[in-house]
Image (cartoon, rainbow, N blue to C red; front, side):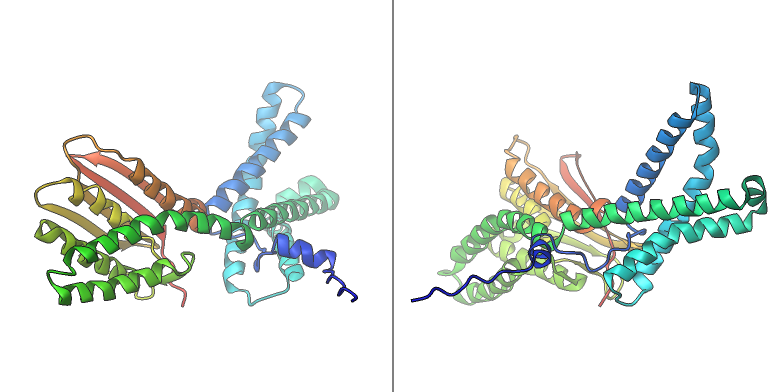
Length: 350
């Protein structure tokens, strides 16, 4: 019997499967990580040019400072234009996006030269043209680097990282929830039934895609269900002070981002303290940032914090994959309380 021939994918398809192309290849000039990387790269390139053109050390500094003002002005304006185009342009072919991104620095350079006639008079038309061409080449280099970096963090690569991070959430979450239900199933069946319904909602979220952005109100409701489960297990000594400030009605956050933070507060607060444990959860919006603050008391005796650090490292990893440098997570111990502060950009797209 003749064996069926193996299906051969074109080279482009295989490459695209291994390293998918991002849907948007215009650099995100609104992202802090992109801004810092571009500015650092441009200034480093400018310094190398100054080193090559300066005959002595003092000339190098003079050349660098003389060119830095104009070059950084072009860079910052290009980043702003890239930011606006990335959000305003309708879906375009990748080739069109690349061409637009490359042309932005050249257009900005031409605009600045048009606004300052003295620059044209000093260099002449040939020098002006060379400036525009250099800016075009720089734009192409920056766009290509950012596209390659986006490919490196493409869904195919990020999927494995998310699964590894998510697997660190599930075990503790499952065991704590099931133990809480088992603790009351015989004494109060009705209460246990309500707990199991809440656990089902929580499990549905845990088994879902942790990359998904969900409404902030939905994530807070999920956290409250988790707290209800733990209050059933720990009794009245677990108290939560919810301080929820006004936020954008369509504010969205990564699914299951807040729950592990509150779980850490319960696990290393209420579970380790014999008396009453009050956990403070404050969520508010400042401008385009969402601020989350969680504070819980800690036991007087030293406790193992390895599990806590794993949970925090998991959260930091997710924030880095989703928000790059725009998110911040800080922890500290003050007055026998463990405090966590997290800042993330507000996502309000439907």
